Length: 392
Image (tube, rainbow, N blue to C red; front, side, top):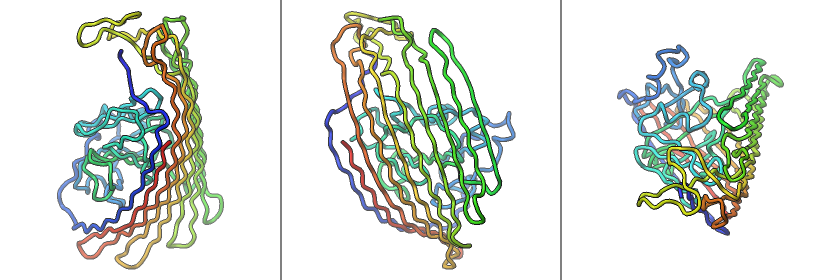
């Protein structure tokens, strides 16, 4: 069997953590190790300077004494990045694979540190942070990205500023904020090939001021895929999926010192189960009922299966500029709920041997409170982080 990923039915787990970190960082003169920008010689957009938050404050990537691969919105567009799996091609020692019996399961590794499992109770070694919120499970992460302000890949370990589960590193995904001027953009694409049908993509965003101190942004995305594969069991197309995402954002300036940003992202996705293939194993033993070449995409399964999941992510970020150390007090509250059901043909055969139903319900919340300020040549960051995650 070519693809057998494990799942546990009825698994119930509760995670909670409390972390306190104080860090004093002296001004560094060592040059940053920034990869991923050398691919840019053919496009001026890829030569732009990038602002990163790898040390919990905004600074140029060239000023950060860390191994960072960073891309801003223009560079992501120039590189035609669709999801995280596309980025790994340009980043050495980084693998951002989607491996699992359900779409969107992240199995990331950096410098050889990673996991290869879709069991949600297994903690990752590469942490993913969306708008400053740590994502507690690796399900529902590798999906089409749109309206992204920047992506930062920090090679690990990164535990000093990012806590647990970042031994391999951390990936920071930052979505776009409301703009000061009215802005609208839209994009569509259709592709296809082989014996399958077409895949259609549509995305649009509108942004601008709603009042003197309130700005708004709305982004919408939809993908409809007819399926690229052909199931030789019945000759039908396989791999159909539909994904819809919308993300409203509000930015509110309470006064000259305090700004609040509210974000909500809702996602719905459903489609066929995995295209599992059986072939001759490493001992040279062929499969019993159907056997295919490892280098082909041929397969025959009697259970097409399905997946159906829904995700909501809410974040509330507050930034308060203070005189002490000319610093900023930041508070980020995050809440995420993810619900999924699926059926997979694990035996990868045109007869019934092992078909696996599964469900997953997760709910997490977290809050990070921190201060960052500059005192002469010393930059000081300290904060408090609380995290709770329930997995059924």
